[in-house]
Length: 284
Image 1: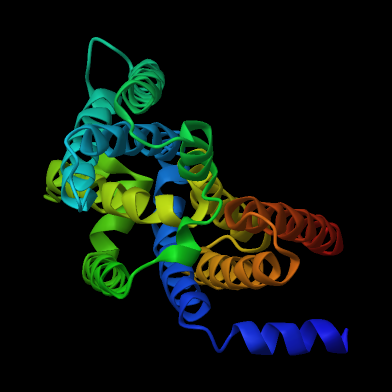
Image 2: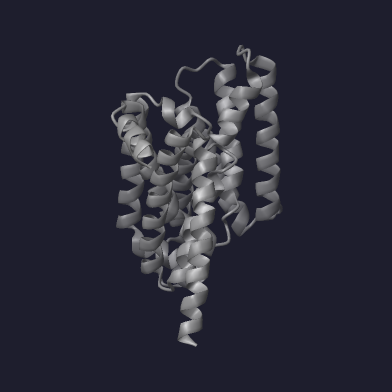
């Protein structure tokens, strides 16, 4: 135990570990806040679909040899998020079918492009790292960290400023429209925020595991609390703690960052589920 603490203390002195913790905590916090809205609106699968779109956008950026693929990924993912949320409200192709179609299509096209145009000698390793976030969070440059910090702060500010409107649109969109709330505008705002979070989260857990950051904090918090505000606070604390613990464990144990975070979130969910069951039993 003492040896592990010494090893962890040593690693915490390195900038790449500090960068990973900063980015990981911010991304986890933003994901948990928006995750509650997505779960309650039954749009939780959109996170998975958009992560595949971001993977496809990354492959396109690789084809054009773009040194900074973030702008292209953001643009394509935001556009897809808007289309998916619109299809969830009114469309000839229903929301779940549209998510599945875009998700599978983007994933297939992305892998095809990487396989065909990549100059790397280790295509399988590159794809695995992108899909599961094996090491990317530990190789962040300072400019990427600052970009993540700025975007995360913007997401948090928007969520706080429009908290009441997001609450109204989340629980009863028809009633919100009836009271004069511009539901379409706030759905558009949610789509943009979700897309930004998805692109940022790819560096943390990879495109295949992003849904875990969105879903587990919300579901775990809902096992313990009933009010929207309490669930929001609990999900934020849960997400930050599990992300930080996952990153530290992965550094010490030399395990994939994304998979480690998700495994810890699963364990924490089981604990919250048991606590919720005991809490419900006591009330009865």
